[in-house]
Amino acid sequence: MMKAFLAVARAAAQAGAAQLARRPDNTAPLGVEDLGAETKSSGSDWVTDFDRKAEDAIRFVLQSYRPHDEIYGEEYGATTVEEPSGYRWSIDPLDGTTNFIRGLPHYCSSVAVEYHGRWVAAAIVAPALRRSWWASVGAGAYTSIDGPLDVGLTGRPAEPVRLAGPVLGRSGRLLASGFAYDSARRVFQFEQLQRILGAGDFADMRRAGSAALDLSLVADGTLDAYAEYGLQEYDWAAGALIAQEAGVPVRRPAWPQSDTTPDWTLAGDIGIPHAELDLDPQHPIGRIVLNGTVDTNDPADWIREQAAAYGARDGVWTVENFTLECSVGHEAVTVTATGPADRAEAMKQQLKEVRW
Image 1 (cartoon, rainbow, N blue to C red):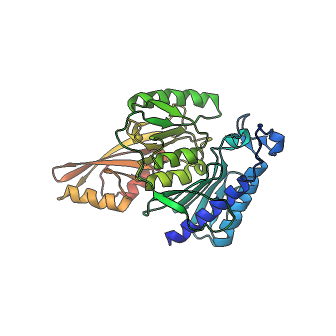
Image 2: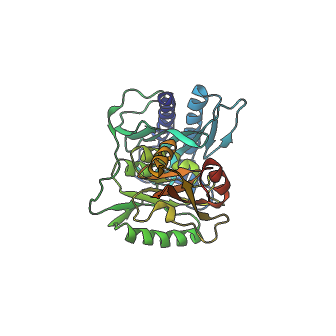
Image 3: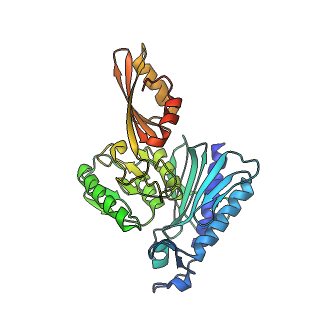
């Protein structure tokens, strides 16, 4: 079943990228009038005719193969359907619009699908880089070098490589990030990134201008870690799954709308436990830490069962956007849960054995 979703995701991302590949090839920078560009929220936040055409192409593929799935896209918002299947697609037709306008090659089409909160398949195609990345839950993440882009189902990829994340322990570590359009939010970001650079022993930073590509480059080991505050869901949806399936620790935002409830998107070792990187002081909801215990004759077995049920990595797993860590005591397990305050009751309902 996941193979079918992955095939659709790859076909849709390729269809969007085929539209982006129509960008005029000019040695001189193109003007915004050449691309049908206009600003959205700020002078650095652009939308072009290519964004719209790419989203049209992606939606056409998705609606052709999956007519009962819902779609959430950057340009046209949410599309609901009669008799919904429960699957929902999150798409960014052109991630890296400013790069696209300026002639920088780091832009892509990004497509991911989730089912009841669990991301199951994703694909990213970067036409100017001639690279693709893709993943499905439980089946790993891959990348390949692309040939010419054509609309339709992807053919046999050129020498796909399974991804395994960054090389651990190497020197000269690189941190990727990006910055908000809002100046007040940037102040908070700069403060936290300074903290991360020191804690993670990073040698330098890189700013590609595309969250989807940054996450993919952590997945393939080009970059060592990624941290950005205030992304929208369609920015991180595909890249986060690709990084996760490459074995990279990932923290997704607890809230999909970054305008009112921003959160961190993290991938890789940042030198700080992901759960401990806090929100800005003005956040309307915030995160909390809960402590609980479970009485059991076999604490290690209880932890193994929970880890298997929730897909734990390195002894840490996520329930209702809470990060859980467990330690073994005498006939008991101590549980520490860190996550969004408005999801605490939902998390407790999932873990009824725990006395909070």
